Length: 168
Image (cartoon, rainbow, N blue to C red):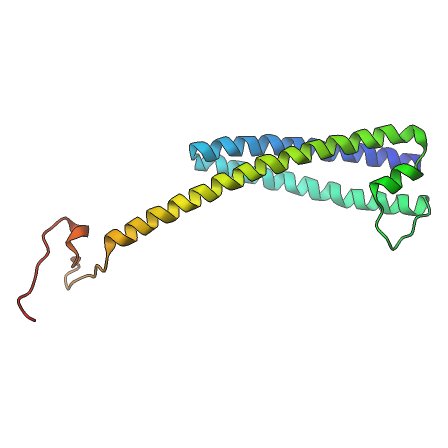
């Protein structure tokens, strides 16, 4: 069981490393959003996707380790194992390492939430700006239609004087 706990601690540190890398990517993404650097945003999205795959592998491994610990610690297999339960049941000399790994993971996760909210706000602002610009274009276009020959009937779009017909 000690080997499983040590493996869990190492895995939590690996997840924290992944989260710290994600945090750095999110900070770069923030700068790219501010500068409207689309190429950088695309590259960072690919990096986040790769990191996400690594995170999923770690998460699957973590669930496997927790199931082993449930069995090893004779915990109820129907209910989920909590961190508090785990710390109470493992040998005392292993508790500090597990708590330290958890604290590191929680700290970086909190930072990720903050920067992700900032990035979300920047994206929402950009979407509102785009929507406003589209509305201005739509208003400027009015009810323009094409005439025979492909010319626009609304002079505001062509820069040419509108032609009127005396037929009513």
